[in-house]
Image (cartoon, rainbow over all chains, first blue to last red; front, side, top):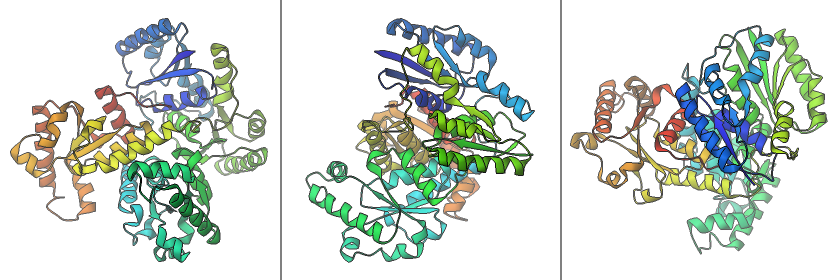
Length: 272
Length: 272
């Protein structure tokens, strides 16, 4: 059974998407076609959306679910004429909040990600640059500026996690690969020893690692299951020996890995 | 006037954060201290949260605003005993959705970002690798695999935007820098000509560019205002001449830039 869900916004659509995804994820047996429609910021565009919604209703034989974060009441009223089931965040929550805060809301669109002052944006760009510049142990003399340093075998997910934390939260995360030399000597690399308190380990299931490494270097010893199993086992031993908290990236999304790391390390997100 | 806002979740906290940020952004005159508390997945942890909330209420002299996405009713009930003003997404929207969909919800925690099947996670990791491998014009023979190619002067924001689109939506975005040689010859670089339909331009205010370049190469000609102004002007001329859509990254967040690009290019996000 297929149902269409629209994430409609006068801005980027991210809030509507996130809210919608959260709620729809609770209905595992339904196959949702999810479509994001940002910048619906005029009544004309809203009318065009109504056409799309009604067309989907007809094709599916059921009302599409509309998750919207439209602030403007007139535009919302146009959308409400569609043959969709509307879940609207502002009409639901804004008045109660106004009462609680004894303040009027701005009723201005697209404010969630706007950069009224630039510090948050520049912080995130700086954090991305930091992650890239300090990726894969390439540079080790800026670790005093890092919020944390991820360590693990090659290809276990360190770089995407660092980039995610940088982009989302302005976290300065470096990463360092643990390679065969480290395992043979069974010690933490020298570059990392002064920063043990900043370290966090990532591990991975060997069969996932083999698959990933085979895409980069097919049929190599590097990608062989035996090599992957060996590296994972030795590195997990090293983590335990050195009392480094670690998490297995195999069964978690980047969001979950990041959230768990930040909780463990007690690092607060940098919000505007 | 300071007020505390808590984003509380039994999972990563992202939905609560996003919802909360969207709503709080409507109240520009209030200074909110925003704290994310993920993995509140037991009654014991909920009771500890209640202490935190009540302490903040006392310190602020006002009720903290609680945005929560807790699915479990018992844990929610514990939180509701706190001296906070609760905005709860599941208790508000889940029943109406169950009725509309004629289906029971799973009532399972942390489902938004879970990877029941791995395709979405691997797609995003692959997209990140694609963005990094095809960054800054380093490699130009994989452009047939790109969803889009960002072009612009050095340091205008291409790399963070590509990485954001990769991580959030699995979009394969390459990027190519337009440098002085391209400007002198006033032509699109040869590597890009076959892919004009995939191109999207980024520009930037010269004073922002100067500030960014000064951090990388202080007091250089590269970072001088005259050089930045020249490059920006010539590249914007090139965009117009070649009919390449472009956007100014200065006044927008990474989310806004990405959303606008995807709308322009008609690229759909890859959801699970």
